[in-house]
Image 1 (cartoon, rainbow, N blue to C red):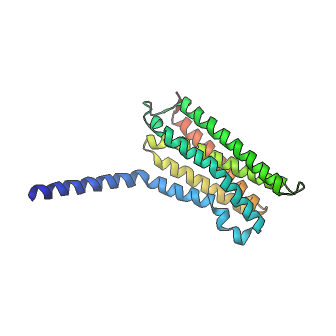
Image 2: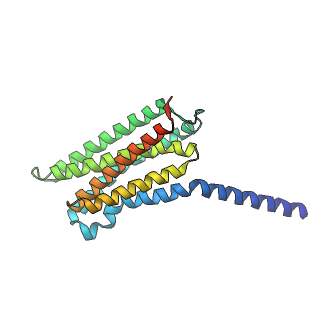
Image 3: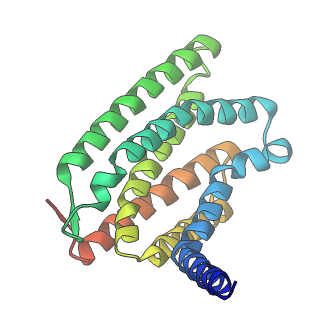
Length: 218
């Protein structure tokens, strides 16, 4: 009985240690994901009060098309993540894996653009199709950039520096909401431009951060 009690106490302490370590490692990522998901779904949340039904349908539809890019990204990461994390050089980015990832993601993006373009041309009047195509292009490119941004962020996890991911997410959120305040255009154009610009700026800042931390392609 004494032996079992001691074993149970050791097991409980070990579990507490693991849980504490997991929370300390992942809490920046949890907050980051919350911010990113809120920004991504901002248009849908405010669609009924700020957009005509046609604009809400367009936003929702193109974001669903863009999910193909995200699903491709998720599948590629699931396949490649072990190779990324076992890279011996902690400041090395495996260029072979990176280029394969980018190549497949770009192909997927082009396919999504073609499908979206065909749908829009078929369902919109020729005189009014330019605006939906512009909106769709911004949303698809923003989805592509956010996936590349997420891929590069894996390197901060390898360093146990998830706090950098949170700082980048806060930067992107502040820029997004600042653009919403200052852009004086239709709501759909406003949110798509704000998402595109904030994601692009966050991606550039992430690349600059990796360069500043002496990351190299290997």
